[in-house]
Image (cartoon, rainbow, N blue to C red):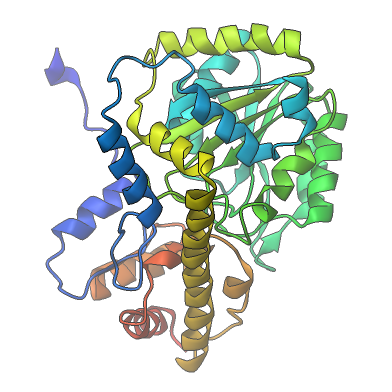
Length: 398
């Protein structure tokens, strides 16, 4: 039977990492995969994570199964981080959170939940969006369509086109938004634009799904939740898919959550039963270690303060590399204005490079960038920025 199976296409991001590892050029640069790197090009564990891991090891806790929705201390901490401790969503009990294997797991649980309960709903994703978004929902049997988001001329939000498209979506469909640090463009809506988006989404009778994977990487932990909280309105429903891979550096631990905000607490319990059903027939219950680390750090005032400082350090380094990249591109005399890179937020930015230029960078200079031209700014450092920008000048021309 296996002889009839055809070779699957390589993943556009993870496949790029495989090619990078196979490249023998000692000066190769990987700006594809979305992993934070420090100034030395490494992804070290956070100090708070190391301390929490030490405490957990000393506690020698149970290795029994977690409940289907996960660790209760963790799911409460997730809600408090998303909405703030005094938010009406928490006070009314109309939000239910389930721990998931990473943000991708949260998205897949959402896809399965939608397919089982709203089988005719379409999920609308921004154009462009994270490369794995369509695949995750399509694998769950959910139809996926695109709507305008990014204006390549201004390198900013195409807000008018976006709102017009939302106004034409059928009621009962879902619209997938990025809470902050839009992947892949780095272009986020302003506070006023978030209000306009919320008005349009709820006015059209749509279900918003907010992918919130980079809290703290734009401006700050609280500041980055502003867009998400603008979507949370009394009596309205939404889904939040969150992740601690980036802001806790827990990539391999797969620590995420899906939070469903429902009109009232009674219906929230009903909706939670369907989410638990989805999880039970998928991975049954989530892994414990990463969630225990997050719950311990967020539940300890000292560790939480230290963690926020570590997030600020990562954020400041990324923003510093944005500024340095723009400076070096200007210095190398590349045509055009690259100041938009400094204005964008998060780990990613559209470089403006074409697919042919990206391939030329890979072939001639061993610099690995996703075909769309998206670059992981966190992969840039003071040791490789000159080589990177000189190579970009070579493939772009003057």
